[in-house]
Image (cartoon, rainbow, N blue to C red):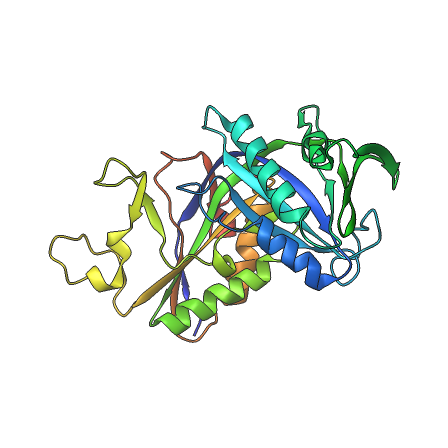
Length: 307
């Protein structure tokens, strides 16, 4: 039985993001670098940024993308909400911490910028100070880079890290008759999103089991549990009930990306991959009627405006 596809939309909002390539000797060390560099980057509610892997590239991945050094690699994005007044400083800090502490420290890893923009961070120079005077500028792979001597040999990275406008907040909700069915559907959705160029999912395994709403009764936090859709609160008389009958678990995928087109593509890929999951009752999405963002990703593709 195919799940109902709710006639609704996900509400995305503008971001500022960086995108870089991590390469290493083999997939094992690419994964270690990616997992470290994207850790604690699920949500801008409390994390310094939202971070995730776009896709594997080079040998063993998307081989149409040729890595500069010919080694296996993965593309990573870091996003900061554009409405933050300190967005440039915050994004630079997040990138500096993650590249210097999580990529440079990973055995055999190298790092390459993927956004060629007029505005950029002098990331290579700042990371290179770790060389304590022994670092040097080099040209390699036809690129201007910094070379840093390390105990494992060397670490090289591009001198510049470009930044650009992106989108945050694309999402899908999977309503299941139980946890197993909701999670299985979300897992299928994440698998379908992974090869889509330009999109990341930021939560553990790409899935949020504790989807939130904007706002809270406590003034020290900006988000809280979405009680309307919590299965174990449906019998609470103080809660507005939002779940269809028979739904006992809701899992969410949140997507950030380069632009609307890639998030629309990822949304449809996830829906098509998951809609026939046994026990899945409905696929929906979260929105705030345009109060959070002005980019609407419709679950029914025929509803998506052409412009």
